[in-house]
Image (cartoon, rainbow, N blue to C red; front, side, top):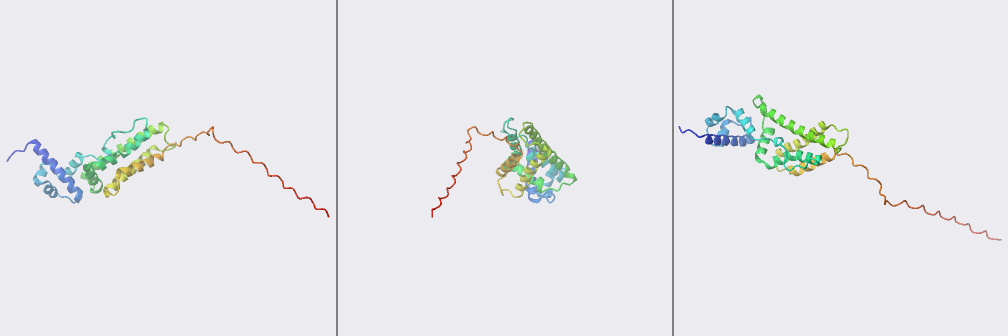
Length: 235
């Protein structure tokens, strides 16, 4: 038997993971057999078991190799710190851009959200997803706090609730878009929706002082002259 090199073994492992992504996406995790993955990868079932103990281990390894949109980290090119609401909007829409532009993220997100029943064996993946979205929501709330301290938000807002609402808007767009890819422009619609949401949070602008050059009120018109009765005619 020819001993495989470490590089060859790693290449086979990624080959299997690539095939698992395709099969899990097409069939759903519960309905995909290891034999299906082996055929798609062009390897034997023995090769799969050499790398992964079972289907749950294969699924977990596939998820660990990728990242989900809300785990993409801080967006590059964010507006400067002196524009808190601009940074907030860019930060909120960054997962939408990552999802729209990265095909692997699309596949893994669709599998995790739409093609997986989270049994006890897959609980670690669900926990990781929850931790990722909680961190993303906390980051949004932190940026909202910066904007609030700068006096840019309406008073009396619950920033925790506002951050949760903003996350729900972004998360809902991602879920809906992955159900019908191409049904709408995720980035364009996301930018518009987030902008409308954030604009609704802005503090009211102070009323502008009256202009010094405003036209003076018009002078009252002259009262009409009383009509004189004609003189009585003599008889």
